[in-house]
Length: 206
Image 1 (cartoon, rainbow, N blue to C red):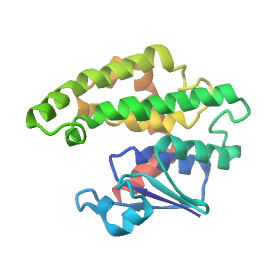
Image 2: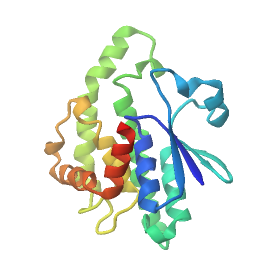
Image 3: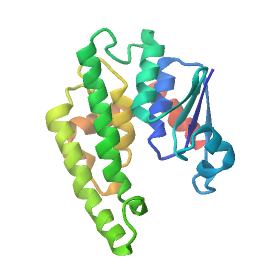
């Protein structure tokens, strides 16, 4: 039994969807950022970083979305969520997910997490103002140079798809029009219709 700790509106959605796509036996526990539960002593004992997601396995706790997605793809090979038999193709999956983690997510975080990088209020405002531009640039690059279609890596659905979908859900709040990237907009619609995605999104509303 796997256990996912998550919060709504966060990158944890990617792992949540992947657990469902993989057919995993899991439970999911929601943390309230409003109540600062991510910094509670109980949760810090699980993930000292005070972040979500965290995935509890029979061998210990995993953190960081790309690591969790790669782990699930390998633990549930029958789900065919990554090209596990081809080291180069698998590395390309990892490359895409690493870009989402290290660049796109960080650009988004500048909107409300400025205190991680600066101390002056003026700096926070400047970082926030830049977010629509940086996020639009990231999605334009992915649309033109990285997205193969119809899924991120081509014909096969992979762990890249729930992750891209998750970050796509942030675009409206970042004042970015997803329709400026029509292939990714189509991807978002098709992801929204997948049974696993609908189930997870409904569960988060409960």
